[in-house]
Image (cartoon, rainbow, N blue to C red):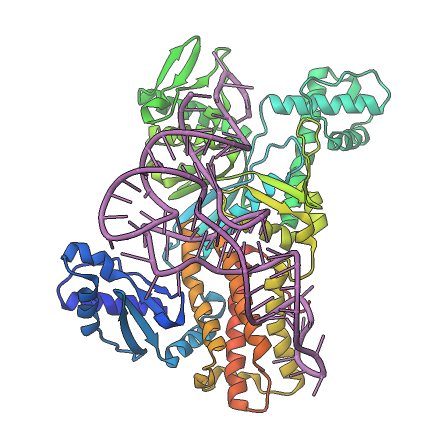
Length: 548
RNA sequence: GCGCCCAUAGCUCAGGUGGAUAGAGCAACAGACUUCUAAUCUGUGGGUCGCGGGUUCGAGUCCUGCUGGGCGCGCCA
């Protein structure tokens, strides 16, 4: 139980005593010490309902407060707010709690083992992953971690669009580059893939297939090249993601939907529901009936199915696999698909509220203060691989999640590479390393470290110590907030403020010192800090180095 | 034209369900290492929260109308 929860419960108790039914009691940290450690503004919320002044209500509440754990030092009413000043003992409980919970501090079982799926990245197998995929990847993986921290059973999935004209274009592009390599006359396909990587694949293909492939009919040759190119690219993507710290439980191929006949099945369900109709030789889904801006084609006039129908079938399959919640993470360029996707899920007979679409805005790379130009047409995308090679996994992940997904992200490559105070990743990691270093030093000095677990914490009374503890106490709340708002960036901001609080404490107070009672108490505080930083970095998927 | 996202310090951005005096980091300036990691810390300056209305005890936050920027608006995927 957090201190905030404890205080909120005290207020609820008091309200109960005076026969007021109200459940939304908030207790927050204060801006300034003059307002105490924590404060609540319930009296304002109740003021209108009870037709009494906030001050009177606050007085009633305070008059009926109980304090079974004896944590409250004094309560003041100021401008209608209820300000709590806690005893030092209350803060010591926080440290005890962290020491007890360790790597579980901040976790919760509220997901009750519910099975959910989160699908992200899902890049086309037509080229290497680019930095935009990196943002989606980091966001999805961190959200997945958070779901796990809240007691959900999470499956990470990557959807592979291994069909359609893009795959044919890929094959044609590779074939053209092979001819080029072999000195054969060639024509590069219009709208083909221009990236250098096509030449790499062509080279591999020449080595693998030899001359025999030119004896095959073109159709068959292209089919083989398509498979080869696709598998090669998928393997690249898998390796890139692995090095980015992401491992998918499932790589789900669009082609398998066709094999299982799921498109037909999904279509039949929509048809049976009366949501389809024919027009201009095509078959349409009446998605406007579910709020979409226009109806969408399911089956083209040439009889082939659209990508959208496959996507509907895919989501049908997701639900059939028994997930109680489905999350898709899409780039901003797909936001227009949200209403139709929701519409289709509803038409299939599922609750659209169980489908969550998370959209993240685009990424701009900056180097030397100016934007890095990227052109998809010329194949000049900066790849995730290049970024990883340059700044490393930790900085890449941290930078990708440090902004609100709704905001565009300026990724400063120079800053991400900097090993200094400027770089937030190093700032946080350095705080952790410092904690570790203290314990190593303690070992050298033959200090009996275990004593800190049962020491008298009442020696922690410096404002810097209290401030650090209050920040530690915030962790479970911040995490919950970041989780429910799908806003992992709040965690990075928290970690930076925690690191700041620790560095401050470290710089002005000596931890390993002659006065043993003080030393053990401070070591316990360092231990707790180290643990919380570790927990936070774990969720973001950034390493916590013991030495830097 | 329609839809979604964004607009807060010179720069990059935080500011759950409306709450007290709007906060960080960078950059600028001034300080702190005989000490457990100076990759650190302390201090100073810096704001019409894009603009106009509205809702109310209270608005950066909610509603509405603008302005500016990004992304979409296919029988492509």
